[in-house]
Length: 118
Image (cartoon, rainbow, N blue to C red; front, side, top):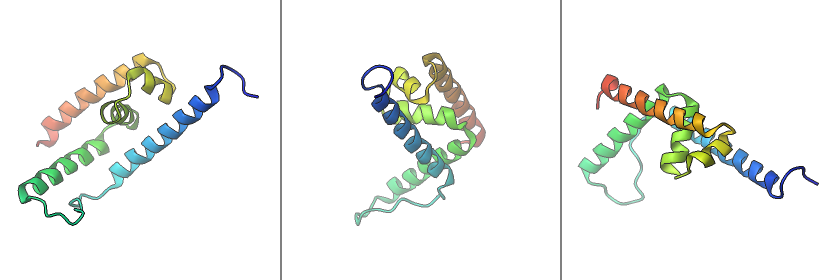
């Protein structure tokens, strides 16, 4: 029998799975080569394809320069829609730490935009 509140073990396992998959996604984003996305048989507008490729390259450059923990928190918050409290549970840190990670990431992204250019 598990110690703690009912469902505690399940929440802990879910948080572990979520964090592991997010880490794998961050690692893959950092290792990915800058190649144009493959379409599923549809012809993309040339301007749209160029804009998509440019944006993807920009994100990959940022991922190489940003701390993994801040990038992980940002992915959970901005892509997956998790609240700071939910992120804190997954990362097993305080909400204050999550807030600081996100603030620091925003400052670093702004600096990278100025440094790396558009």
